[in-house]
Each structure stands twice: as C-alpha cells, then as structure tokens.
Length: 181
Image (cartoon, rainbow, N blue to C red; front, side, top):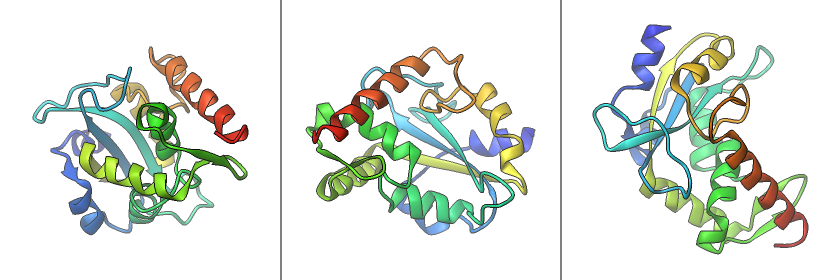
C-alpha cells in the first residue's frame, strides 16, 4: 500500500502529458488542482508542487469491469462527458454557476456540449494527475480515501469536512439540470 500512496503523491503531470502516458492497466489515480480553482474547496497540499489533492479514483471499480487507468482517466475524465465521469459531475456542480455553464437532463445531469468542451479546457488549465498501478484497486480505494482525504470523493468519504458541501452542490446542479437550467 505504501508504494501506491507514494505514486499518488508523486509529482503530478499536466493532463496533456497524462493523456499520452497513462497505461492501460488496472490502478488508482489522483487529481490535483490549483489552490482557489474550485470555490469553497480545499484539499491536502502536495508536498512538492503548489497543488492540492481533489479526487481519487479507481479503474476498474470491481471484478466485472474491464476499465483500465487509460480508459477511465483519458476516455471518461479527460475526453469524456459529465455523463460518464463522477469527477466531471462534481466539477460541473461546483463551477456551473461561476462559469455560467448550462446543463440538461438525460438519465442524469450533464452539461450541454459546448460547456463540456469548456469544462475540458478548464481541467487542462487547472488540474494535474498522478496514478499508481494496482491489480485490484477497488480493494484499497476506501483505505486510500481515508488516508489521503480528497474533498471531492463522495463514496467512502462521508466523514470528510467538505462532504456535505460537495453533496449539496451536486444536488443543486441536479435540480437545475432537471428544470432545464
């Protein structure tokens, strides 16, 4: 477990570099962001970069999933949509009002296409990434969330001081999307 924590706490890389180098293997990933990028959010400070930890994820999330670090990070988060990414939904919920992004309802709230592109651009400017290979990442995710304390994670993170803040932002965004906002 120490090697996973060390890899997730390594020097984060910009998303353009991550998109080209994240391997197609099982593992965990950590999203790091600039301080002040997300209103009301503060996460653990990186020891060597002027960044804070925001979110930790896994790929795959269980035995039945075929996801890899590459498919999840690049396909769902970097190049995906709010419909396929919990991270993107949390970012949209926290930023939509400030950025004047528009949402719509499908089977869940999603940003309109033009604003999905704006979110991707925002992520490329403000976020960086680390990752660690692990054969069964879902078996250590809860322990890592408890140890690393990422503020945007909702699963396995109900005791985090910002849990309610993020949950409430997501609830408001969900309501706005369902009412056509």
